[in-house]
Image 1 (cartoon, one colour):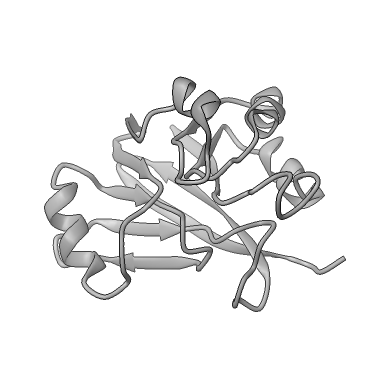
Image 2 (spheres, one colour):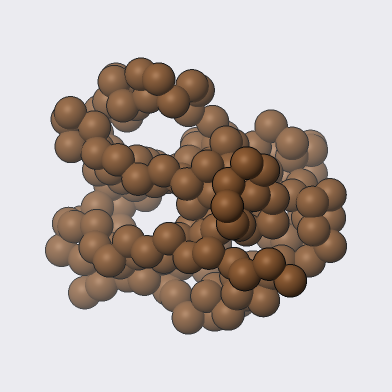
Length: 167
């Protein structure tokens, strides 16, 4: 069995963009699970993604009481033998791997957001860290981004960072 995932974070709709990019909506309709690592900003984004497929997500520092009422700060799930956790913030990049090994010892994959900077590393204990960046607010990055991947037989496979062309 294999599960295809879309990873997004920091959508900031409607503050950074009026709507989700078409590329994100297309990707959402082609996966088995949509994972959002916080800073939705609007419940409308949750509703829109939920209409495209199953969603697992967390709230971020820019999310209000409405989103915090329906989403956890940290989400955990086992998907096709992969122990997954989702959180918005992990702190500074320096020392992140060691901190996340300590904070998530029973986890194989940690999805996070907040920085708007794509990230893909493996910690000394084997924890895979993925940040999909932001599909709407590239900040100092060359492009807006999101990720897709496959979870199968206890492995994280086929991680792809997708760049969204500028309009």
